Image (cartoon, rainbow, N blue to C red; front, side):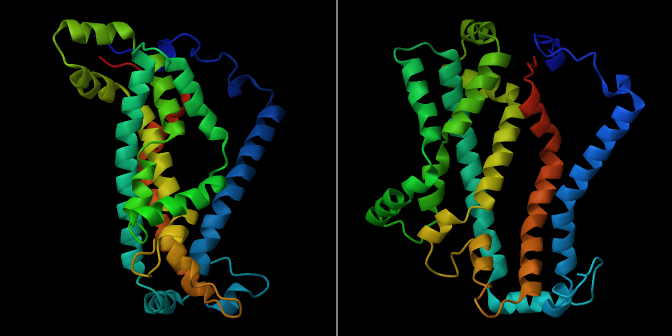
Length: 294
């Protein structure tokens, strides 16, 4: 089998209207717009790292500091004294990894079933699945808390990653990707060769859905890592808090150590920046076009 690039698929041919054909003034305006957008996106992250090295007084002075200070050691020491930060960060990592791994498996499996199998009620079931996306997540808070209380899962990480093993968005994404990029003939050929149904999924479908799985994995990991409302409902002790929930305890009505808080937030963001740098290429491929590899 030969590889089929995304640009070979119908409707994905490169546009003949590139930026090089724009008039000079239009091109300059486009560059300025991109530059402004990049600055607005990067500035909060930059000042977060800068403020992590300053005292509370320096952070709130006018004008605020724009370069790194000398108080990073004190802010880090204060952060470690106020909360079990590394334990909380490990809780976030444990929860995010389990949620991402189970979501990728079950959503890919369900997406494969919806895309490649014909069974009675398939479209109705898929429509009901999509309808759940219209329900605001805040409406589920009370039933979710009552169910977890009845199961005895309060203060347990499985209260968050077990319900998160599959998502309507994930199933929709994988179904659309598999249906549009993997030909049915490939699955039929594998069946003729004697492959089992799960063998086809493991050896044919999974290797060909890398960009979509990377996209779904990154979105799921970030969503779980930054999750606040779910951990707030489930966890009761500081030892089981995730990093965002633990950092929230640093904020008081009258006194907040903003230097320590910014230091904790910066340390929490670093893993996400590394993950995005490693998976950005697959993320873009998954969001733009499908590909089939032989």
